[in-house]
Image (cartoon, rainbow, N blue to C red; front, side, top):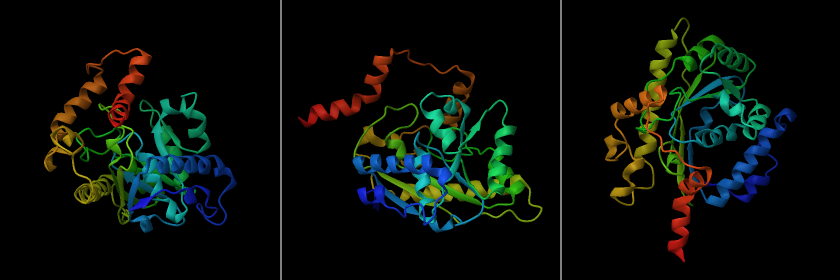
Length: 293
């Protein structure tokens, strides 16, 4: 189990002997993320980092359960001194605070109404030897199982002639995920598992590669879930476990219905003022501090 330390934050060789000067903003953000990880005492179990190629292009395809999965998944590539260019919603790039950082880190904006440009940009990055990170479920899975995958990751790998590295992330959703309050707690375990490369065979269709990718992701996620060191503290804490492991998360069928309502905009949303939103998000942290007095 790896816990970020202050030594990691200042390590000169964290990004290899001769990192690209153009990636200074990205390296700064990673060091800042390590500071946060150290302050909160996150306990990382990163497995399979050796499957990330030391050079050349590759697609990392992972499940998606948390708002911060990309930060955890990026740790899996650090041992090979690789930086991952994530595909993210274009709206994030339009944010006044996050947008400049996203562009400086050379992440790839995805406009869901016109995805061809993002696809082409990702293929160019792969052919240039970059590692591109994709969450092929497109949205967070509220069932905490692998949803149906979009074919873009497989199509990119086939067109660019690069492998897919299947991956699974587990644990970060206990801190921040959709439909739940942000819970800022210390010592949360986060598991990142990367599998063996899936290399498209000559003439293999994208759908066949996609099926292999989903099977690998499901197996890796099952490994991460069953080997996770923490268990729910009680019945009211089983929300973060999938239904098939005894949790109270929505079943895949129920989650699919919730996704339909989200896409159509028919989900019931509670209207809150900005101050109410802050209180809602930070309520659990304030409550724990009061109990600790």
